Image (cartoon, rainbow, N blue to C red; front, top):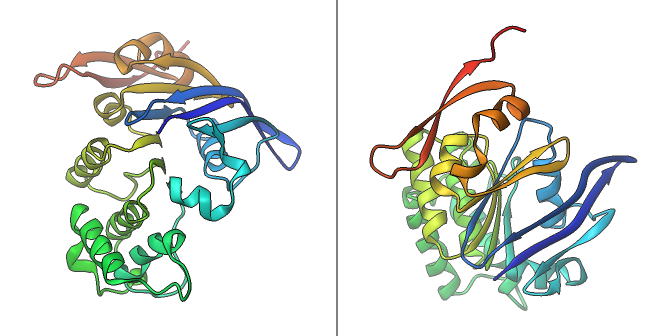
Length: 257
């Protein structure tokens, strides 16, 4: 499913935080958003998954206006993993994952045997099957993140929106999760803070600064030393990954003026 964001602007409490953003995530592609803290990445994503309404512009899924759908209709197409996601109630991990099935359920809302099997598979895909009966509030940050990703997968969306999905994960888990997401076949729009992970896993990057997209394209074209100095305030040295050939970055502080 194709995701099109066109002329999107977002205002919160009267302040414009995102300005006229246009981008496309083609079906089955992993598109990354990168930028400094406070640049507008999370605000943009919140508008895409309908936590905010745009001040201007549209979000379309295969030509359908996402904000014109009911909540249930939208949730059958798009799942989101915000930065601060979870529950204040001590459900088990299996119960949290089962919440992903709610958009597909009717009547009593109780999960069917097929729902439970799908949730079990989602937990297994993220390496968290052993957590199924554990209380969610007693899990570590990394364990919670894997359970929440499993919940998103159990929702069976066609588009996945992820805001810093590798938060709280160790390096092996970060690589596993991004490989899983990339291989899922879903259309994925993800905000990532690790530029090297973004360079390896994303088909295309959009760099956001001060609520505006300032560069777009394949990672090796976008992540230039000049742009990284201007947007992130660091000196970057580009190297090639010895196996994949993907651009990787080594960082220094900029020389004092």
